[in-house]
View 1: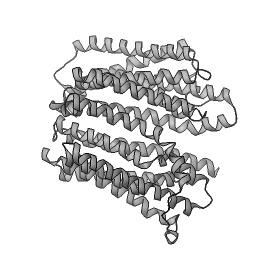
View 2: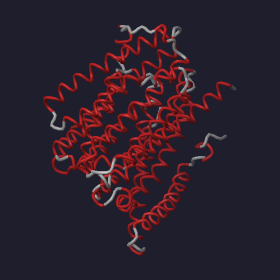
View 3: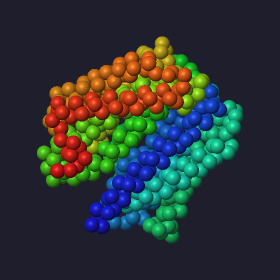
View 4: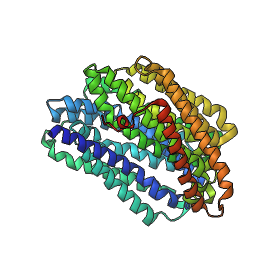
Length: 474
C-alpha cells in the first residue's frame, strides 16, 4: 500500500511538474510578444535553443545514467559526489569552449554569452539525484519556485524592447534559484563532511553512452533554428518559435500521459506478459488518436483568431505555422509513446537511437531545402515531415508487437476526420458574426469540438472499441 501511494504521489507530482512547465509561456507570452518584435523573439529563441543543447551536452547523460546509479547504489554519498564531479567538469568545459567559439564567430555575442550562463547553472541541477531516490516532489518544489520568480520579475522589470538582455538574465536567475533550492535540500540525504570531488572513469564511459540519445532532440531543435535564421532572418525565427511553442505545449500534455504508464510496460516486459502490453499499447494509441482529432481540429479552426488575441498584430504569421505544425501533435505524440514507452522498455536502444538520428537528418535536410524559400513556414513543414518519418519508422521497429497496417488505417481516419472538420467549420463560419475575434474563436472552437465528438463516436463504433478499456476499467 505504501509503495502504491508513493507511485500515485509521484504521478501527481509529475503532472504538476508538467503544469508548471506549461504555465509560464501561457502567462508571459501575450505580455512579451507585445514588448519584443519577432526579430527579438527569434534571437532569444535561437540562442536559447543553442543553450539548451549545450546544457544537454554538459549534463553528459546524467539525467538518465545518474538516476540509475543513485537508485542502485549502496554508498549514496560516494556515488553522488562522483557524479557531481563529472557534471561540474563537463559544465565548465562546455561553457569555456562555447564562449571561445562565441567570441570569435558569433555576431550577437552578449545575447549568446548570457544564455550560455545556463550551462554554468546546470552545475547545480541535481534533479537526477532526487528522481533516483524517488523524491520527485523535490523537483516540483524547485520548478514551481523558479517559475513563479521568473513570472513576477518579467512583469515587474521587462518594459521595453531594449530589455531583451534583462529578459534573458531573469530566466537564468530563475533557473539558478530553482537549482540552488535543490542543493539546499541535499542536506537531508548527503553528508557534506564526506565531500570528495573525484572523477570516476566508469561513470565517464557509461554516461557517455547515453549522451547521444539524450542530446539528439535538443540538438536537432537548435540546428533547425540556426538554419532558419541564417537562411532567412531572426524575424522568421521569432514567428516559428511562437507557432511551434504552442504545439509543443499541447504535445507535452499528451506526452505526459504516456510517461505515466511507461513503468507499467517496463514491468510487464520483465514478466513477459506481452498480451497485456499489446492491449495497453493499443488502448493508449487510441487515446492519442482521439485526443489528436479534438486538439488538431481545434487548432486549425481557431489559429487565426487565437494568434490575433494571444500574440498581437506583429505576429500574424504565427497562425499558419500553428496550423501546419499541429499535425505534429498526432505523429509526435505517437512517436514519443512508441519510443520511450515501448522501444526503451524492450531494450531496443539501438533502434531508438537510429530512428532519432535519422529523423534529425531528415529535419535538417528539409530545413536546408525549404527555409531559404519559405522561411518559418518551411521550418514548420520540415518539423511535420520529421515527425511523420519518426512515427512510421517507430512503428516499423515495433512491427512484431504493434500491427502496422491497423495503425496506418487509424492515422488515416484521424487525418480524414480532421480535414472534414476543418472543411465543415470553414463553410459554417461564413454565416457567423466575424468582427469579434473572441466570439469567432469560441464559436469555432465549440463547433469543432462537437463535430469532432461525432467523428470520434463513429471511429469507436467502426473499430468496435470498448470505451471502458480506454479508461482502464473492465
